[in-house]
Image (cartoon, rainbow, N blue to C red; front, side, top):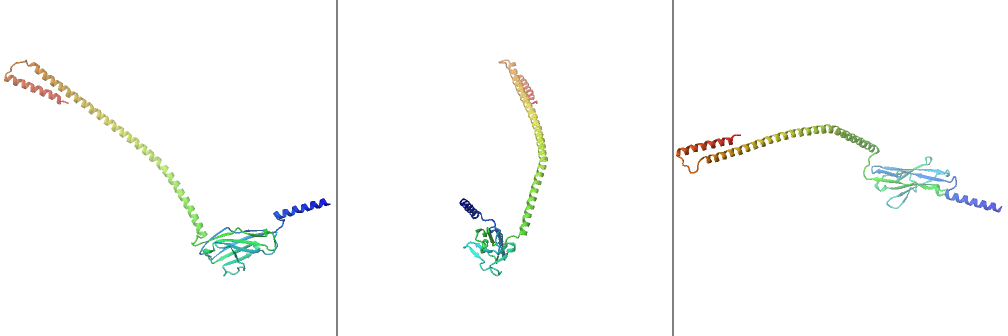
Length: 274
């Protein structure tokens, strides 16, 4: 009997330890969700922050809702008096049947930019899981006017269409460039071949003219050299025919002079002949 009692005590302690660590089955558990970011501009007269919660294993009584704000100053506990009037800075609306509560910030200014945290608690339940807060909503109030969702959607669609249009134009331009570049390249190759053929013809003509001129120059130089040799030979032959120490009469001198003149003319005529 004593052994059974000890085992029952040990089992009871283990059960209490498990319940203490993970919670007993059917214990009150609350979870809270809220949007993490919200952005408005100064033109908004009011902005509403929604908070949704769920309660499992909790009593049927209405929970207590809490709102906190963390800004540049110290944390604030909002709406302790209820905040039921829209004339107040904050207005709280409760819809416990739908498990929703909301906080409306009236007359929005840039100073209202802060982190707003929603809290739900069942005061009659001592467990910590019966008292939970959301992750907080960061409210940003811009001092410049923001674009509306409709205008933002329109601009996004317009930018997308422009991107598609620019891409299509770029692809078409590339295809046209490739299609035009091939005939131009063939035309350039053909023109280059024609230019090369014309250049080759001119080179051949120039070489032929140079060859003819070189041949004519050589022939003329040869003719001049032959004429000079003949002229010198004739002079030497004429000088050898006269006997040394012979005396001539004026008539013979005149005849010899005429012969020499004739010989010179004949030589010169051969020299000038092409």
